[in-house]
Amino acid sequence: MELTRKCKICGKNIFIERDRSTFFYDKTGFYHKGCFVEKKKNQKRPWTDDLLRAFFDKVSDTTDKKVDDLLSKKREQDKNRELAHIKQEEKKILFDHIRDTYAPAVVPGSFYSKLTQLISGNYYKYRGSIPPLELYDMWVLAKPRLDKIIAEKEAKGCDMSQRWNYDLAVLLAQYPSYLERKERLASIRSESECKTKENLTETVLKRMKTAPKQSKNENEIDISAILDEI
Image (cartoon, rainbow, N blue to C red; front, side, top):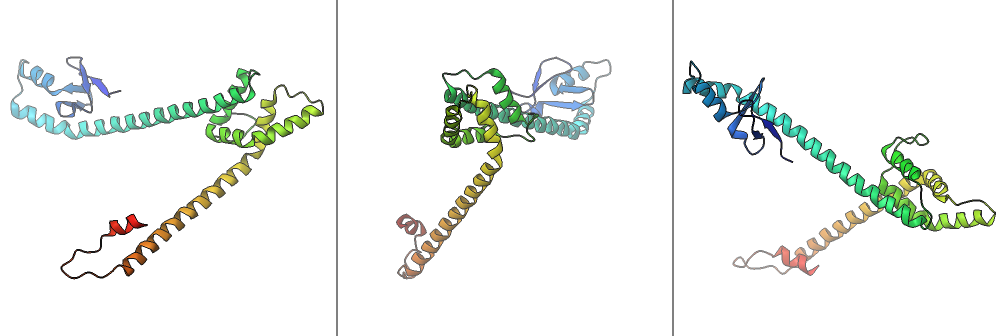
């Protein structure tokens, strides 16, 4: 959505980004330059071109500062909206998985509310928040173990008709371990990528050293050709 303000004279929209050279701002509001010029030219004591030019020069810095502030706020709002949209999509992935995992049982709305509170950091039984995709990941990874635990409890006569609450409690208890595992895997992946880059660089340098020397009239070594061979 474009950022707009109303002209204080004609009342029509001023498009802040695309009309930047056609308006100005002062402490009373936004104005089309054309509207302002027409008004000042037609008043009882008309403004001269020099007076108008001096006025526009005077309000130029104020206008630029105001526009920059508005655009900065708009970018922040757009970013927040995008993050909110992404979070909604991630929540949908989690909620769809919950629904499908426990079907044909119907998971009550109160459980989804609990998950929403947990995601936003407002769940009174848990300090902090957990991103929806991390909850989803834990649910997927832990399902075989959770199924085994539930089967053992049901064999002992325990009522597990609302096992989603039990499963969530287990996952919350295991969340610190999940984060440690995730961090460890990320570290291993990073080390592996660095090693791959080092090996590639070493291979390229070896190829360059062993490449046949060319005469002064010939072109320099084609690095891209060496890389293509790797």
